Amino acid sequence: MMLKRWGSLLLVGLFAIFMLVACSGNDKASTDEEKPDTSKEEVTLKFVHWINEDVGKWESVIAKYEAEHPGVKVESIPLVENMNTQDYFKQLDLMASAGDDMDLILFNQPQELAKRIGAGLVEPITKFTKAEGMDINKVYNNSYPAFNGEYYGLPMKNITLLVMLNKAHLDAAGLKIPTEWTWDDYTDYAKKLTTDKHYGSYLHSWHFFHSNLKLMGKAKDNLILNEDGTSNATDPTLRASLELRNQLENVDKSSVPFTEILSQKLDYRQQFFSQSASMVPTGSFMISEWGQFTPEFEIAWAPWPKTKASDEAFAPMSGDLITIAKSSKHKQESYEFMRWLTTEGIVDQGIFTPAWKEADMSKSLEAVVNGTKKPDAIHIESLKNALTSVKPIEVIAPPAYINEAWGEFGAEVELYLLGEQDLDKTMKNIEKRVQAVVDANK
Image 1 (cartoon, rainbow, N blue to C red):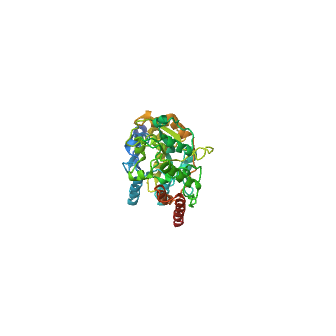
Image 2: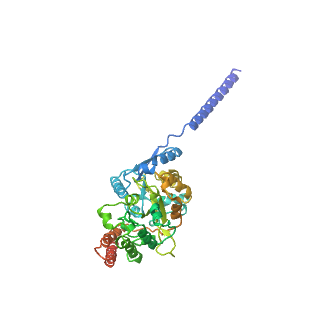
Image 3: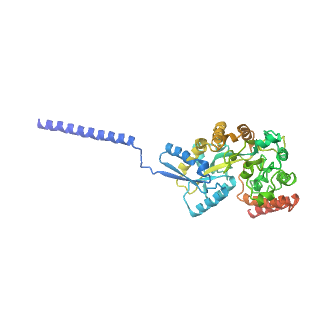
C-alpha cells in the first residue's frame, strides 16, 4: 500500500516536472517571437559617390531601405562637395591606395570604370545576376558594356544626350521647338538665334564631346578607338564633327568662340542660364542639375540631331553605374542594396530619370521636374519627345587608354579652333598621335 502511494506520488511529480518544462519552453518560444534575433551582426555598407546631399537627397532614400531591411545600415559618403567627377575620382583613387573601407562605388562613364577594373578595385557581379536569373540588358536601359564577359555593376540613372534651348529666344526668332532635326538645322538655328545680346550656341572645352558631335551620334563605331583597341581616327564623321564646330564658332560666329571659352574660363551652365547662349548640346541630367542657377525663362528640349534627315534617330546614352568594391566584406548585402536602389529606390528618390525599364517614364519625369526649384521652367512635352524619340547607340567596352587618345585628339583640335593650323594638318596629326597611343599600349 505504501509502495503504491509512493509510486503515485512519483508519477504526479514527474508529470508536474514535464508540464513545468513544457510551459517554460512555450514561454521561451513566446519571448523569442516577440524579440528579434540580435545574434546576427549589423552590417554597415559604405557607399562612395560624388552627389552631395542637397542634390541627391540620400538620407530619406537610405532611411526607407534601412526600415525595410533591419540589420543593414548604409552610409552615404560624397567624396567631394562640388560634384566634380574628376575631383571625385582623384579622391576615390587615394582612398583605394590607402586601403580605406568601401562597399559600393558610383561611376559615371565606362572609361572610368574600365580603369578601376584594370586596377582591381571593382568586383564582377555576373555571379549575382545569374543566381537571380536577371538579364541586365532586359531589365535596364544599359549604357555599360561587359568587360571580358563580366558585368561590373547595375545602371542607376539614365542620361540621354539632347539639346537644351531657351524657349523665349526661339519665340523671339519665330522658331519652333525641333522634334526631329539635323546638324545642318542646328547650324541654321544657331545663326537665326544669334543677336547682339547673345550667341545662338555654346560648345564647351570638352573635345571628346563638343568637338565630336557627329561621330558620337553614330549607331556604332562612335568612339575614337575601336573595341579591339585600334584607332578610329580616320572615320570621316570625326572630320565632319570638327568642321561643324569650326563653322559655328569661326565662320558663322553663331557659337561662343573657343578663344573666349579659354580666356574667360566660361562654363556651360553660366552661359545658358545667364541667357548668353540660346542652345547647348548636353545631357538629360540638366533637367534638374542646375547648380547655383534658377532659370528666368522656359527651357525647351530637342532630340540629338542627325547627320542626315534620312538617318534613324540615335542618341548617346550614359548614366551612373553602381558597383561593388572588390575589398567589400559584405558583397551579397551590397548587391541587394544596389538592386533596390536602381529600381524602387531611384523612383522614390525622384531626382533622376531611372535606367530601370519598368519605371513609369511619365511619372518619373514629373517627379524629377516637380522636385526642381522652378518646375514651370521645364517644357515637359518637348522633354518627353527628346527622351523617347531616339534609340541608344551601340555601347562597347573601350580600351583602358581611350582617355589618353582623347587627350591627343583634343590637343590638335585646339590648334585648329584657334586658327594655328588647317583641318588637313589637324586630321593628319590626330591620326598620328592616336596611333602612337595605340602602339604604346599594345
